[in-house]
Image (cartoon, one colour):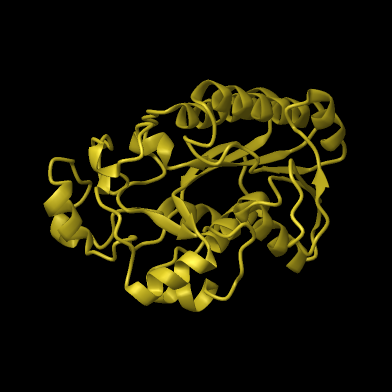
Length: 296
């Protein structure tokens, strides 16, 4: 089985490559920029060119696509949307044309939390329709980045239905590298403010494990998953967050029984992924796994 990893020099993509290599799986790693820290070869390519994508997808069984702009403020809104959409459709269409059987795509919690294109978290309304956040949450995009991600999700459903491909979307929250994880562990959490995204986070290496499981699991068709740690960035009890900040949002279960603001049971059941339960557990398991392009 041959894998193509786009965005392989980034935090998530590099962790995926390391897991694939540890499992003895063959992969081709590409990125728009080089990274001298990688201990595996990375080809520098630009997937905004369709001809490049055609060449890359020849002989590929699984496309794992992480090469998008990183956030809503990575670039001007119109440029960000156009470039993400171009990358995504170039790769998806080339994958379909060359008989690639599976696509794994990294989407974002911003598709469902309605994040506005502003930096002040305290000014964000709370758009989520219910709690806990789960894999069935409808899209509520409120910025061009989220719109580009939702468009990619719709495109993958289209390719699954028309080309018979297995297409798996993973909506990620804030992905925490080892440096940030250590800081959170030492301080007992991270002050976030405004629970419009339920303070959701996930160690980046756990996110990579979910992607690799999606690439190899015995599933078919189109799937959409949400992954996050059971606890939250502020290390507050779920009931406290709901009662103080989210009391107007309907809950799928009694508030007094809720131990988490997220529900990842679907991805655990269907892919065999193990949700990190606590900050201590995550630090013990992932705290020494150094990240490429660490957060400053």
